[in-house]
View 1 (tube, rainbow, N blue to C red):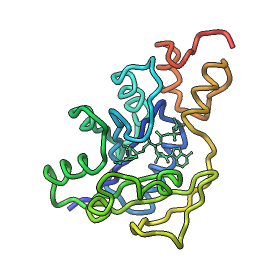
View 2: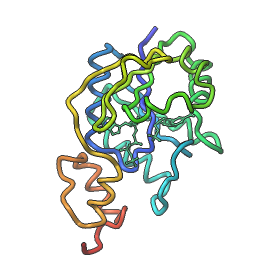
View 3: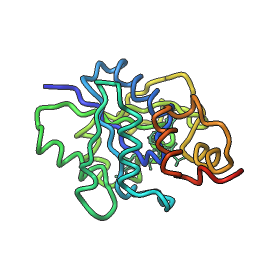
Amino acid sequence: MARIGIFGGSFHPPHNGHLLIAQEALAAFSLDRVVWLPANHPPHKELISGVSSEDRMELVRAAIQGNSKFSLSLIEFERQGPSYTIDTIRELKKREPAHDYFFIIGGDMADSLSTWRGIDELSRLVTFIGINRSGHPLDECNNPYGVQMLEVPLFDVSSTLIRKRIAAGENTKYLIPDAVRNMIEVKGLYGSGKSP
Ligand SMILES: Nc1ncnc2c1ncn2[C@@H]1O[C@H](COP(=O)(O)OP(=O)(O)OP(=O)(O)O)[C@@H](O)[C@H]1O
Ligand SMILES: O=C(O)c1ccc[n+]([C@@H]2O[C@H](COP(=O)([O-])O)[C@@H](O)[C@H]2O)c1
């Protein structure tokens, strides 16, 4: 039986905050690996247009390259409609019933758990690892879904900030991995290449 971290997100694009929390969860919970799970259609978020699903997948692949404990799952691209986590976890459980699943979320997501589809069943199928995020400290008192709290050094970066910086021609080095930066530049994603 393996301990599998699942890290879902829009990853639009992936940034060093994502890498940091995935690595911290891996170490703190003795996970065997962390599976990065880009959402095809994030249920609670409107994806900005102009970047294809394929490019989003490749950006995640670029972000995790070189870390043998990280892998990419495209399982949510096998279904249409909102990418509800409960559907994904049921499918993973069907494929690998013996594994223990841990679902990694930032503090903003931990605050929203009560609105997730099938949250009662989901919280029995996975252990949530909730990670502090700037503006979203973890609430130890209000924890109906048994979220395991993990404090990590705050890294106040978001994909929104990265997109804004790219479009404005501002620095993103050390905020996103070099391989992600290179791919964004080569493909001209997020308005890169335009003058600020
Ligand atoms: N800097 C961060 N610190 C802690 N958690 C984070 C951080 N950035 C993202 N996360 C968490 O990672 C998961 C995936 O995040 P997502 O891909 O939506 O990135 P984001 O930076 O929140 O994107 P956007 O700015 O587009 O909303 C979520 O659970 C989110 O809470
Ligand atoms: O299943 C749900 O109802 C649900 C609601 C909100 C978010 N999620 C998942 O949470 C993960 C992080 O979401 P996001 O919007 O921050 O990219 C991603 O895997 C989403 O599919 C899932």
